[in-house]
Image 1 (cartoon, one colour):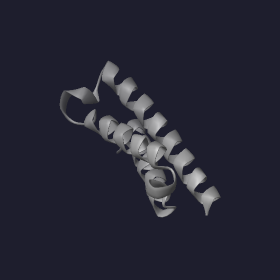
Image 2 (cartoon, one colour):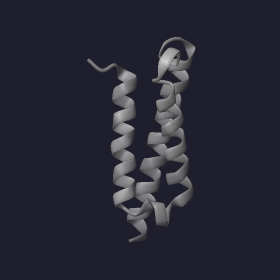
Image 3 (tube, helix red, strand yellow):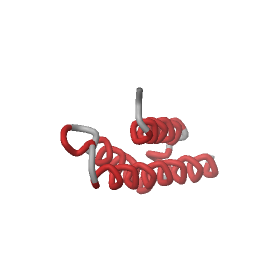
Length: 81
């Protein structure tokens, strides 16, 4: 059974994929790349001892930021088509 953080990271992954399919890596590079970086950093907190404690909140915050940036990149890219 996956927890809320795992689901949030998965949802963000899907949004990043939608942004990629909308060619956000060309039309909205900065937001797209920053979303990738934040997502990667959040995923690092799922490994080892970081999974519990105060770092969990940080990972969730990073995931929420990554989702918002990926959505922004996707929307901006779709508007430029």
